[in-house]
Image 1 (cartoon, one colour):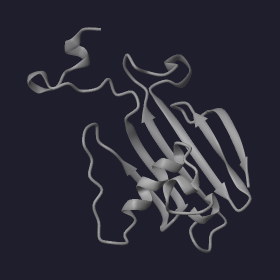
Image 2 (image 1 turned 30 degrees about the horizontal axis):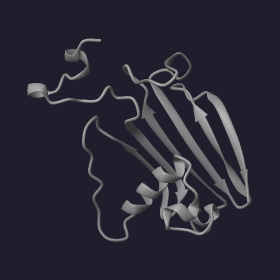
Image 3 (image 1 turned 180 degrees about the horizontal axis):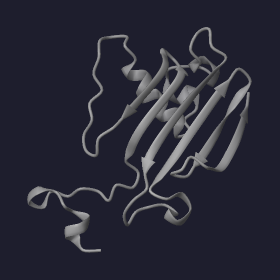
Image 4 (image 1 turned 120 degrees about the horizontal axis):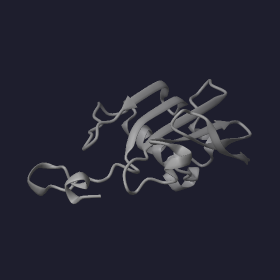
Length: 143
């Protein structure tokens, strides 16, 4: 691949191949969010809002989707603590780009990989999906 294809930014400004860049975040009953979907742009993104509006909850959700333990986020003692009050489950879905020379198993996942973390009172699951949303791997978590 030519450098001009990998680095199409203005005046030699490098831009990544895109693999690993977060495209979309979806939260369901996670912390203070009932139903939230955010589409992110290809470069820098800002999450703004008033105190207590859930900005940190979005960052925590990303950590949880990528496999962080509850204690590792310093926001909860157990995963079930992330479930919104009055709800029985929570879900976090993060879609990441899987394009270009750094793509991971592109023949299997296509142009995107979707990470889904579902949480309920007794545990939850982590699922890896291809660009069409078809499941390729699920790990159940108890406790």
